Length: 213
Ligand SMILES: O=C(O)c1ccccc1N[C@@H]1O[C@H](COP(=O)(O)O)[C@@H](O)[C@H]1O
Image (cartoon, rainbow, N blue to C red; front, side, top):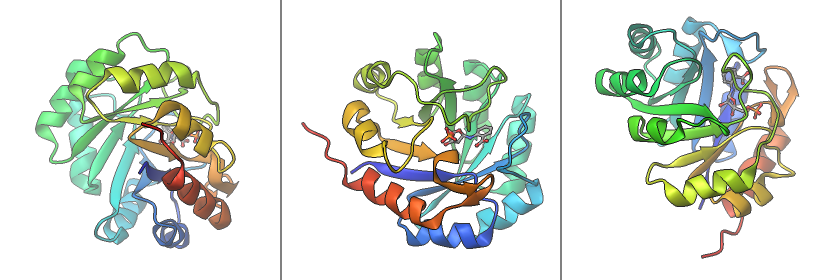
């Protein structure tokens, strides 16, 4: 079964809906260097992370400019995992993994040539369609066949992100066969506010998509 993460939660009511829908992970976006309606304050991300129930993974999605800052953010928010976007190189990702008491997800653009190094450095690789500043949440899909090759080649779990919606997630899972899928803008009623029906459909279709042997 393919796991589902719903990213960019800013409100308790959306957190409750995401948990009720059966999502495996919840993304809280804080301290990012791009302008996004899904960003929350560090305090709010901390409160939301504390409200995530057992057996659901809270993920801090952030864009630190150094290893120290990444570790500081993890210490403050206390998530179960941290998803790092931006300019940290693979050796910095490895250093965060060593120092922070959480699983580390490296977010990379689908066309990044250093993808193998990131996969070695992190606990999981999130393959996204990132913007020029390294941010996600673009609502753009990428070449799924290329990401399918990565999934086949790498030992590290691959999370597929970028432009996923309830309408395309089953096809995405069938094509790429990722460990998990991740969505932010594709299940929103408006920027930063989740559409609860879309969340339910996304999780159900991701988890029930058929992955042939
Ligand atoms: O959601 C954002 O705005 C964001 C900002 C900065 C870094 C990461 C961000 N989101 C991540 O990007 C993926 C894909 O987003 P989308 O589904 O294409 O809108 C999302 O799942 C988040 O992990």
